[in-house]
Image 1 (tube, rainbow, N blue to C red):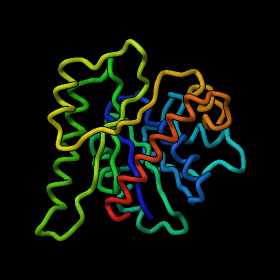
Image 2 (cartoon, helix red, strand yellow):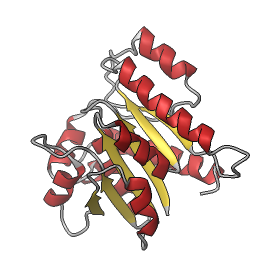
Image 3 (cartoon, helix red, strand yellow):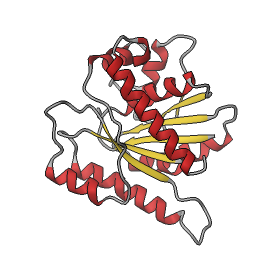
Image 4 (tube, rainbow, N blue to C red):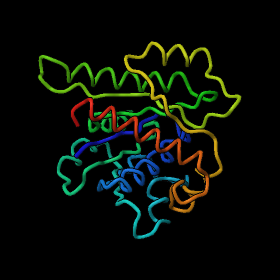
Length: 221
């Protein structure tokens, strides 16, 4: 099973939007997909579990993991081609667990509202894990990429966050998401943008999925 993790230490940066739309797109391409909600549970709405509960029988299977044991739990789960982890929140241990579980870690960044400190913390976690899985351990170095989330026509990446991203030991996807009503509507309805009429949103999700599949193929997944 190939595992893709979306991680951030800051809430409301679009991880759930990307995770759910990626899951549906991969399912539509023939993969059996498991969604893993590894975010904090509380009064906030719009989690993967909320999305799944609102969906229909075609919604990808979803499980919740509320403790930092994602990397221990996933290897024992069978019957899926792809697992997608949505791990957003302040708990560093959960971030680390999701990164350990992932073949590809995606770090969503909103250009104008990114928190340099929290992005830096995620980078540090990824760097540490990559260093631990390099030779001479003979384990494969896990891949990572930034992905631009909720961009607007006028949004520009702040100078500090731009420097952090440019100096990170991994790059960013060419594809990303824009601020669109279709994403919010689909998330609230337990659907994806494929069920909306927004062709531009659909094209964004397709481009993200294509690029992810290309990275995973190059990495031998």
